[in-house]
Image 1 (cartoon, one colour):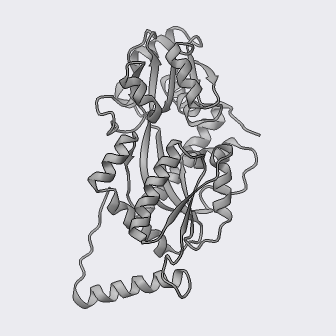
Image 2: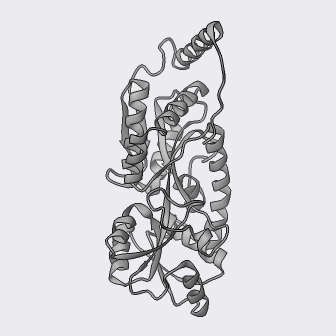
Length: 329
């Protein structure tokens, strides 16, 4: 995360502070922002990774803003429902969306989407990155990425891989792996990660790429074999596990990011304030440890950096979805 330090002193510092306060006040009328609870919409039900991470972010925002930030779970259609609700909300800073990689996948996956994932939202901050993990059942003969690629090339179409469903990030991440490694494997879609893990442990399927959060306990308990993570660097929660790129497929990278966006047109001062507050929080050891316990790595960074990531991933996943043939009516 890059920091830019601006030195101001005395009268200039006072003027700057007053100017910022005036902008915050102007963003919501006569009252300074915030003067009422802020709603943080989440596209998935309570208890999942998105909900847990959103509640951690909401707590940090509440402390910094000195106002309640309420998590509003609006599950449905892989996050589509929550995204549409936020896109239609008044851009006043009181409705924000805690979103993740489905934000840039769903517009290519679903035939009917009522929003533009890039133009209808203003980036605020990337909160964390959560790696996916390439994992295998313990009886599988491949013990590394290179061995998996070699086996798949020797037996094209014979290895079964599991995903959390057609079009899920676990499906598309493996399709990208297949494309970059030049291999063919047979897709077995499940209705969620839970049943997938159960059958992977039982040896009903051979491999998967899925969220590291539910896989980490199984790997540490010796019930599954972790081969690699999908990020561009090793995960803080799994420093001993290589990335897929360093283990045999150069250039491979899938980052399952989570972050905050706002309806397009939200006053820039509000986004800048939340960005600064969460960037500061993400440097604290307590929060870092809390995120690592969930299998997540703190991210942070500027609004521009997060906006660029969203645009880049929007283009990247359009190609992957198109080549995979995945569609949801």
